[in-house]
Amino acid sequence: MKLEEKLHELKKPIMVLGTSSGAGKSLTVTAICRILKNLGEEPIPFKGQNMSNNAWVDWDGGEMAYSQALQAFACGINPSSEMNPILLKPQGNSISEVIHLGKSIGTTSAKNYYKDWFMPGWEVIKKSLKSIYKSNPNCRLIIEGAGSPVEMNLIHRDLTNLKIAKYLKANCILVTDIERGGVFAQIVGTLELMKPEEKKLIKGIIINRFRGDLSLFEEGKKWIEEKTQIPVIGIIPWLNDSFPPEDSLDLLEKKSRFKNPEIKVGIIKLPSISNFSDFDPLENEDSILIEWIEESQNLMKYDFIIIPGSKQTIKDQIFLEKSGLTQDLRVYANNNGNIIGICGGLQMLGTTLEDPYFKEGSKNFSEQKIKGIGLLPLKTTFFKKKLTRQINSVSVWPCKSEINGFEIHNGQTELDNLQSSLKIKTIFKDLDLGWYIENNGGGTIAGTYIHGIFENDSWRDQYINLIRKNKNLPKLNKKPISYRLKRESIINNLANEFHKHLNIKSFLN
Image (cartoon, rainbow, N blue to C red; front, side, top):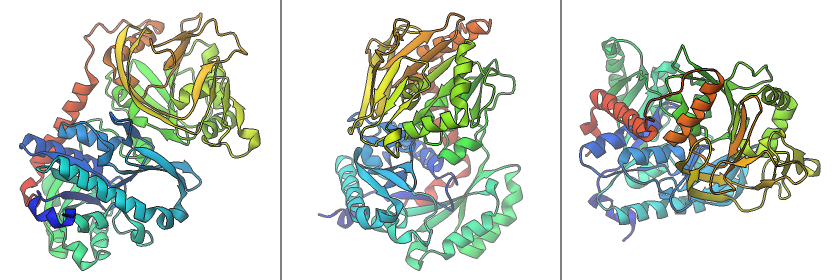
């Protein structure tokens, strides 16, 4: 029996649509997932197609968007690439890597995506839905849309909004962000552009990120309901918890909450930055202030600097060189600064980057082999096949500790025999996962392939203590605070606030 013939037997799916990107769809889904879990249901998140370089690797080695992984955590279940069957990872110049059910299967231009990938994409979405329901017949899908559902120039090739809503006959919620202004036009305009059969699926409207007294919006609520004939089922206040950004635009707007930090961290804002959720554990450290570095400057005000992951490592290394940041980082390192590179950041810290198959942003022959920053005696060669896997290892620096995380990268890194490698040491018992060098003055240059390294509490605390020692600050003598427990607390706080202000029963049946 086809899935569409069985829908009447299944719990009604809930779909969260938005009036724009960044309206709050992802966090709304996260909150609803946790609320329903607490009510005894079996929620499962789903997003048919996501475009993001902020990725996660499931336990089968499949890539998926981090936002769906976070939503799975909210459901109390393990993330699976079936929850995000299509992941598009932008590479620049309107080109994206196409990932189906966790596996990379090619690249596409935006112009050719509809022609080449629409029908295969729809089939993989249906396959995932069927598989989820087969394994979890009592579940309720909580589905996230993407961007706006009524981008009229794109709607014919929209795989992840109204096409899924109509296929599953889902109860849809429309979320809008009042913080960005124009909330009435956003709501009415979105609904007006829907077809009558699509508009009928909208069961409620959520006003997100409201500042001040909620009662002051009563007149606005009444106007919206009279104009649209759809109830406003929630007015969600501005929440102060440090939630993961939904996309790279949110990342730039994100500000650290702490005004009197003891440690100041600079993160290089690479043009092709990936996996920025790596830094969420640092966002939740009371003693740390994070700033984003986008242009050449004196870096000595930072206690340590992070070079993050990159979707286009050679392209981003060329950016560092042309912007002057490569030289800034060398000066900073020579003055006993502390630098840590993650994945692509590790590769850029090395001496040489070689891209024989044009996998990492090299455009021509002259760019196929370029110099790195040169702070670690390592060379990286990029191959055709990508490595994606969960990691369980043991660190030997800055402390002995069990380490969990994941790898997503092209490229193999090894010691550069052209330079002295006597000073370099390995960070983990698995010798190919990370390296470091200690400066005579106390600073360290380190790099690792492990995404999620800062989620390892003992390791994070000991690294921060190295930085504190360099500043003559007292050692953190607290018991390490589990980031995973902190994440659970954040999700619970999010769900509790939504539950207080959201009529959850209005869209369950």
